[in-house]
Length: 504
Image (cartoon, rainbow, N blue to C red; front, top):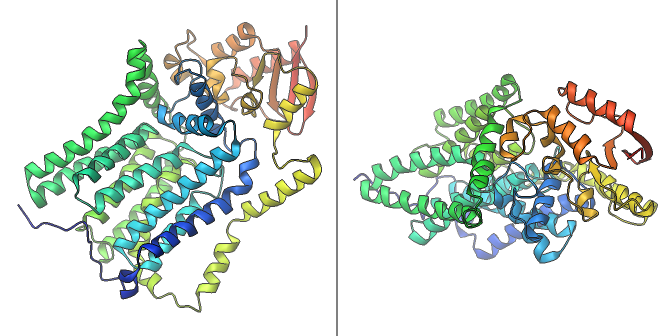
């Protein structure tokens, strides 16, 4: 049967008496600190029209759900339905509010950081735990376009919550909750399936070694069945409305097709994976990272699973890395725990100074919204607001409008995209997923022709001095430009947006 391990009270030589004495009030204080940090860093971005085009797409999908349309029926995007449910819930509860959506996102970041802190504090010393929590807020809120609410932000709250429940309790109810959290994570972003599969295989073997076959199978069945219930609940609305194939195509097959069409170079992916794996190996070989501890082993399995999913998917960007940061920060904190423990009070002000200087993008955005308030009378800024304002002022709001940039403008104008593929402008040219749009077109060029000739928008919005589609889409750009030059006139430029109107 092997030696049983008490997961509810993990031991670590690095923990100090002060660490062990920290109580509930201290935990609440840490949660409050992380929440304040998250809101402060992300707050000025609450007023932008869009931060990442994916977030704009999720908002449109959520609005359609609130309006009574299941995901994938009138609008489409390559994410499982619970991503859109997050946005639909915010819109249903608080109305059409950028502030509400992004505040909920900031709270998700704080909660993920708190789970990261809590797991670290059980495995290491308190200074290392605070580092991991603060680092999580920073890395999930800075650099690139991650100040918006991405699917990965939602995903990691539930994934890290599941790990926390699995680590520190054997209570059956908590295992059920962990399974529910993993099921939600899967139905937010299907690519997490590979790390979860590896995690399940590891836990099956580990529970079998420590407590025997019966306990092993029982726990994994409870965990898996709880996750399956969530997946089933997302499927049933489609089944009962005769759209079961739509769910299968959109939730399972389309993400697989998207994965197979990876676009990041292998060297870039290896450049990410190799240093992380070498660090983990060094931590293990040096004795700082004990893989005999189930918690440490699960974290490493999760990291390896995520890296393998990046390699298989063939692409990486700033918001994909959101999945990697929390478990990696815990491993880094555990490996470097003694170094964190040696940080003196004299060094603390310097560290706080560096942390204060890091969110440069935040300070610039605070200045931007203040400037916008003085110049235009509102904190809200961006072409997603100014273009709809222009169309309303010029009595063009009822014209069929195609936003090939700043497509959050549909939401501001209370419109839907004129074609399902235009829900996210880049989807127009992702021909690998066309079989799952339920369209009759097979190529990107056919889809562009369909939109321009049959949908025939009267107003088209593009970005100034930018090709409409990816530069690799040569034929599509040539065709679109020829139609734009022949049949449309440039009506005006609003900030960085070109507004074209069809010649009648």
